[in-house]
Length: 332
Image (cartoon, rainbow, N blue to C red; front, side):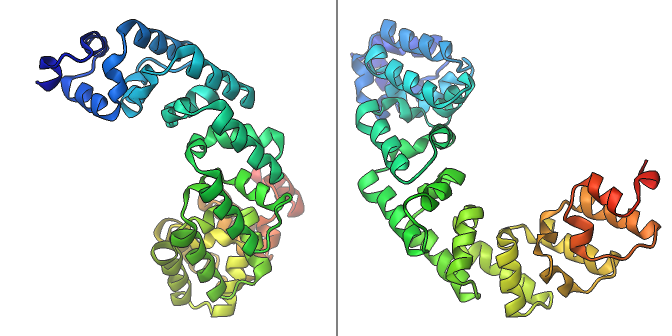
């Protein structure tokens, strides 16, 4: 095999073999990181031990190193320790840093001064609360690899076109869903927002979607939103009614038709005996669990022959529901 016959890094090869890597995996890592050829097994062992010491389980280390073999070539005290210590200040729980590294090990190869600090400053300038900064980075550590000048600035500019302000509103959107920054503005976010406009959402409605359900903007309009819209049309909803439903509960466009929308609509009409357009007065109907909320409460009301609107039935916690309709005795 090539790695056996060459003169490169024989000690590091034995380091890998001692930790269960096969020759194919070792070869792939050498292809990914040419610097491995000059790494001594002692240095690699130090980095390996350090990663274990910060809470990364040894069984996960082979996968992490395979993704980013450069980790073993980095200076322990020059690169790894400073980044881990800085990340530790962002998360209150030690396991959060270990989890972030396992998710995106390349984060350790970036510079604290050149990448992490400017990134934190960028988000702070957008009004992201200090407590949220750490959660954002640790939840989506890939953020550190994005260019501020091109990718992140383009994202902010796009959100500004929706009418969101740069002094807090945009920061809240990014903090609520840090993964939105991984999507292409031109290929995903703009087409999705254009689709939402085309089905009747106003600029104010779009702002509400972005602020409260940014994950909706991240979904493919043709593959996800359009089929859900078409399903609602087939159910008998008019265009204006669908716009009302989307405005009231935007995730209706990304919920599974078969597992979420269809069972709820069938239950509404066939079991509850209600008109389908009742949900336009209470779009949050689709937010509630079918078995734990809808079926249980309907059963309790039916036993007492109580009639009420969907909002009266669902828009309260269980205790208030039981008190409102005098159902404590029957429920117990």
